[in-house]
Each structure stands twice: as C-alpha cells, then as structure tokens.
Image (tube, rainbow, N blue to C red; front, side, top):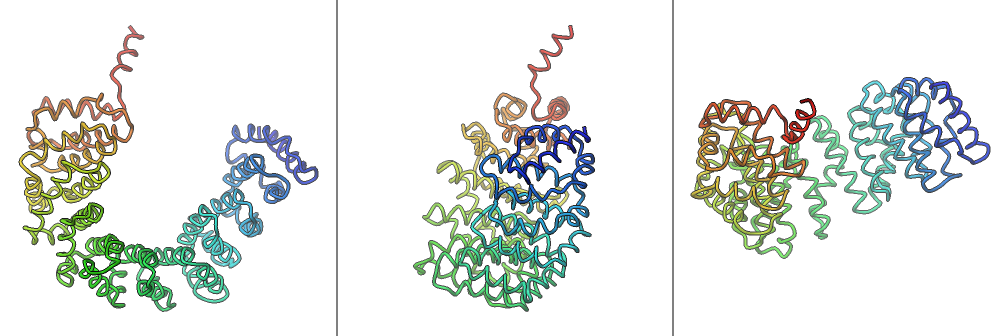
Length: 503
C-alpha cells in the first residue's frame, strides 16, 4: 500500500507541476485513507510537496479544496520536529497568500507544533512566522483571525515570543495591525489579556509596554461600542487575582463602580449596564471578599438590578449573583446579605413560572450556581443551600418537575442541571426521594429523545448512583444503580430483540 501511495503521489505532484492537472487526485485520496500514518510519513518525507503548496495559482473551487485537504492529511502524518524542518519556508509563504484553504491547513499545523515545547522554541526564533501570524490576526478572514489568536496564545508561552512582540521589528507589525480599526485593535487586546492572565510576570511585561494601559483608556472614549468591547476584555482580565490587582492600581475599578451607581441617570446606562454587571460578577468570583469590603455599594447595585423593570437587564443581574455564588467564598459573602438573597430567590422563582423560555434557561443556570456545593462535607454550605432552596417557594421541587416536562429541550436540560446539584447533597437527596413521581420520571427513558437531554437526565442518575442517597430505599437505589450501569442511551427494546434472536 505504501509503495502504491508513493507512485500515485509522485505522479500527482508531477502532473500538478508540469501539466496543471490532477487526474490522480481521487486515487491518491482513496489510497491515503487506507494507509497508516507512519507509512504516509515515510512516503511523504521523500517527496517534494511544493506543488501542493502552490496549487492555488492553477486550480480553484472544489478541486483546490480537495488538494488542500490532501496536503493537510499528508502533513498530519509528520512529527512536529520533521514538519518544521521540512516545510517552514512553505509555511511562511502560505501564510502570506490569498488562499484561505491553504492558510487553514498551515495554521492547523503550526498550532500542532506550538503544543510541542521543543518546537515552540523553534517557532519563537523565526520572526517571519510570528509577523505573518500577526498580520492574519488583523485580516478580513474571520476563521484565520481566530486561529491566529489561538496560535499566538500558544506561542507566547515561550517568553522569547512575547519579548519579540513587544520590541521592533515585530512590534511595528503589531502596531500596524492595531491601526487597522476597532475590530483589529480589540483582537490584539484579547490576545494580550489572555497572555497577561497566564502569569503575573506576563502582565507586568505587558503593563510596562503600555499596551494594557491603552486597553484601559478605551473606557474613556465616547464611542459606546468601544466601551462595551473594552468592558468585555477587561472582564476577562479581572478574572485572575493579578489582573484584579492591576486594574485596581489603574483606578478603572473605581471608575466602573461610579458608572454602576450612575446607571440610572446615564443616557448610556442601558447599553453599558449589562457589561458592568458582568465585570463585577467576574471580580466577585476572583475575590468575593474584596467586592464585599471595598465595593459594598456595587453589590447592592447588583441585587437592586435583579428587581429591574428591564427583563434583559434583570436576567444579567440574576446571572451575576449566580456567578458570584458559584464559589465557596462567594456563598459565604452572599450569606451575609440574607434579606437580599431572599428577595433574589423569590424573584428567580417568579421568573421561572413565567417569561420567555430563553430567559428561564438563564435563570436556571444562575440557580444551579447558587445551589452548587463542591464538597458536601462543608456542612455550613450544605445547610445554607438548603435554606436558599426553601426560599424558592412552598414546592420548589414541584416547579422543577413541571419544567422538566415542558416541550423545550434546552429548558429541560437546564432544569435537570439544577436537579443534579440538588442530588449532590443529603438534604437534596431526601427532598427528591420524598417527591411523588420523581423516581418514576427519572427512570423513564421515554421522556427524552435528544442526546443532550438524555445526558442531562443521566447526570442526575449518575449523581445518585455514586452515593448511598438519603431517603431512597435499598430497592429504589438498586434501580437507580441498574439504570446507571446501563448508560445514558440504553434501549430496552434492543435488549429484548437481542434476547429473542438468541432463543
């Protein structure tokens, strides 16, 4: 088979080069699909693949796509070390062509190389590749831009790459990309924030370079869309402790606090409000204590926003409380706001009884965070979540089961995610065991037809099966265990047919 592949590939490469023909393409693809990777490499490493890298000047449409796919499969067989040594120049050239399919192949291979530490060092030393990737980051092809961002984040794990990006000549290319408009500028900011989050050292270097300061100053511009983009990127930065420290030093958190408190009187408040909420929600996950102690008015603003007359703003505020409550420290901070949490949970319950389905899904996501307990041995948190669950109303489990029977898969999945959290803790297990019809519903596989819903329901089964749940009889627990052992996609009819065929 390897010998056949070599003959066919050699003929194909010759035809492409000399006759602008690819008559053997179908045969090459067929043999390639039946050949092991090591054999593909042993054949390909001795062939000149240049014609496949330059075929965009001779072919177009589906033929060009098929040739690019063929090249990708050949390169996939190369070990990263051999790939760079054999094709680095081809890669540099390809990244600067207009052939989108070829660029996609090369970017995928470079991402593969960047995950290999030894190859990462080689990539770091070649500024031609780095400059080409930066140009793609600012290009019109959205897919290439996204892949370039992924590659840059990988490459900057090597300190030499970050250093090169921040100094000439590479920094000139970077500045040129940022001068390409708001979209290009924020693509660069997104990469830099991801790099800064990776370590305090990276953040310090980016701070010294002035690029992070430029990001912070975007919030001073009059363009509301620019401010929204800046808020989104800053929300990522505040999600790590050293990012939070940096943003406090710059004074931007104090400015955002003021924006939060003035949203009612700010003409742009309706636009900026959700972004401000998400920013402080991210901060509340990073350091709930600092949010409570240093910015108590902001926490009040978040709770007040849950009672907003604007449904879209209200659901973002509810999600923000949910995000803050997803951590142990976040729950303990919110515990000290008992009255506000009581109002919050009652509002959550009311909105789960009425409103748009997509909003209900988001409220359920917030509730799942509120009820999540990572370690059920933390007795105080287990008791806290039980109290919070009771604040949802007289019969919260009835409400959840009604939602589970609604004809909307995304709503059922979100509800089952909440029930999974309830099933993790002893009080929740006892509550579910005492709920009329719950076990029958749980073990009835006919209620779900979609794969995500089957998996969501099975998550509840798996949670109960892996502990000795409180409140369930030994017989009922065995039924749960049996369902768990059968897996999420078991079909009793299949088992019956198989058994009948054997009899």
